[in-house]
Image (tube, rainbow over all chains, first blue to last red; front, side):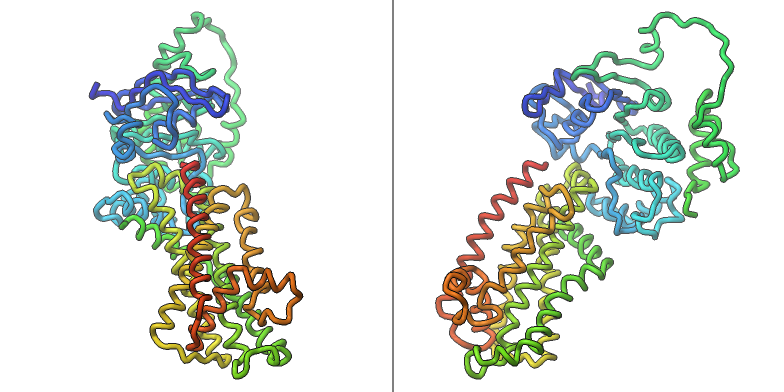
Amino acid sequence: MADKALEVQGLRKSFKDQEVLRGVDFEVGRGEIFALLGSNGAGKTTTINILATLLKADGGTAIVNGFDVASAPEKVRESISLTGQFAAVDDILTGRENLILIARLRNVSAPAQVADDLLARFGLAGAANKRAGAYSGGMKRRLDIAMSLVGAPAVIFLDEPTTGLDPEGRLEVWKTVRTLADGGTTILLTTQYLDEAEQLADRVAILHGGVIIANGTLDELKKLLPPAKVEYVEKQPTLEDVFLAITDDKGSGTLSCVHDKVPDPLSSVGSLLREGSDPDE
Amino acid sequence: MSKTIVLFGRLMRHILRSPDTIITVLLMPIAFMLLFVYVFGGALKGSLPAGTTYVNYLLPGILLIAIASGISYTAFRLFTDVQNGLFTRFNSMPISRSAMLWAHVLTSLVSNMISVVIIIAIALLMGFRSSASFLNWLAVIGILALFTLTLTWIAVIPGITAKSIDGASAFSYPIIFLPFLSSAFIPTATMPKVLRIFAENQPVTSIANTIRALLNSQPAGSSIWVALAWCVGIMIVAYLFAMRAYRAKI
């Protein structure tokens, strides 16, 4: 049991007469990136909100980091961090002040040091003393995720981390998430983008009609389909490839490798984040 | 408690970084004070009790208007936190769930007391004089603080539940208007009967009369108890509704 970061069993939740979750079961191992995939309104956010102790379930159990969300919500809140659907940063404070604020609230020692480390790690050092309200969408999201890392919580919930971001912002976030997982943090992320789940997750669960209808590694899920046929198709660049190629003004050239081949995540993560892919710089 | 202080520090930084909110809050009451004292003051002199200068008569009402307009920013700040997700973020962190709400209440109290001090300073420049003792001043500050708290708990309700910024701050307009239909600017004696009955029995009249009496070292009589009863009564009702809205949100 101790190797599980999340254990969810028979989770049920209704809003008025609408039954959103009808017995959701899944488990996430420590250090795993687990993607909850589903269309809009499938109940992804509801699930996350229950796990983050923001909502009470109508039935079922949810154990986070060994603590029951219903009976030990304070312990759960000490174990987790929630990054909601929209970047929750204080626009009036600077990036650095945002991080220091969270560090103080989490009783972390040396808040300023923690803030500076995270700013450097997320390529925000150059914008540290700018108000977060002046950040681009991608930078805001990176700050948002950095704020979730303060105090090194065991489990991080990322609710649709790339919704509303432009393609570059999306890549920034993907790289960030991969870096996190390397540090041993358990990540539960929700997404409605199939490629996002494919790019990031160790395991994927599909939430549909209030229940998990499929759950496994990407390879396991692929086996659910009829065997693949071999076809020869000319690889046309997608509009995203084109967009990224012609807007790539950093000269790093690392952006183009995203789609058809997955590079070793580490190699591109480090360099691009540190380069400071900050459009305002 | 220490978390409340951290969050309070954050909100005070907001206020210091948006001087426009300070100016907006102060500008209107100061403009009213100038208008009433220098434009209408001469003509109104006859209706005032003998020996009272108009700026002395007027100041309590101006202070109440300033607090009522300051309070709309309390709702605005809370609304912004709910809207941009910080409310949710703090609620998923290991801090007491009331810490954030109390930080807003404390910010409201402190920022309004700052406006009160600034307005009193300007009134002094305009000739306001008080013979009040230290104890009387303490009582005045206490009543203004109580009035602020009462309006703050009212402001929390739209701050949490409003769907738009306009909705979050619109509640304060009738409250800002209330002093005009009271004894705050002019004694109620010359008002038409219906209006006079309303004016004499609404909370602002007793609060303004109490503060005026305290500042002029006159006996406040029963008006102080009426004022306290209004404030405490409204505050309890507003607090209960605010906490209900708050709990529904988390």
